[in-house]
View 1 (cartoon, one colour):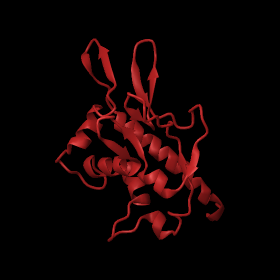
View 2: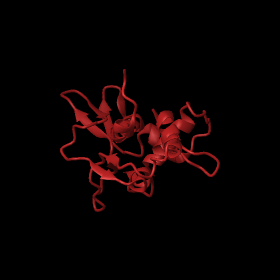
View 3: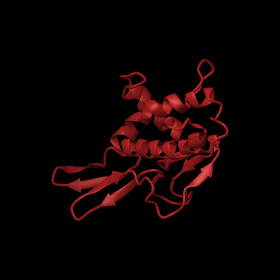
View 4: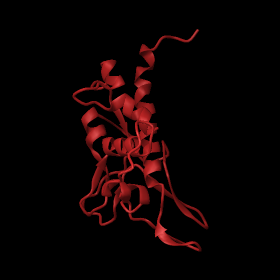
Length: 171
């Protein structure tokens, strides 16, 4: 998922994204499903990921369109560069950061064996700071980064629906 979103969005001085080549990257209104940010909150901010609790287990999940509020339509800069993770200890990540870290470290775009402290905290769950306690022992809840990526992908799919009127009709 990260690689596909990276192909659609990632631009550098030497490369242009697919949406950029189609001249729609800056004109689309991006679907933002993130939870409202509360700067005075002491808990870490995990704006795109939710926690599902059952009788015996708590786990992360991507809420897709099941949030209790209407998603916002925002500009490219707000969506791509606005932070969606804040550990309240100095580390914030944007959608661009999450996509780049996953695509560049987990494979797809390429595999980097050097794990930055930022990526290690994202992958191990330390960045989100939710702890599980069960018969296997205590530790950070895992896969936060994967569910965050799943929600980013959902947002991108909804955003791309704006292009539907411009696509050729299927025969």
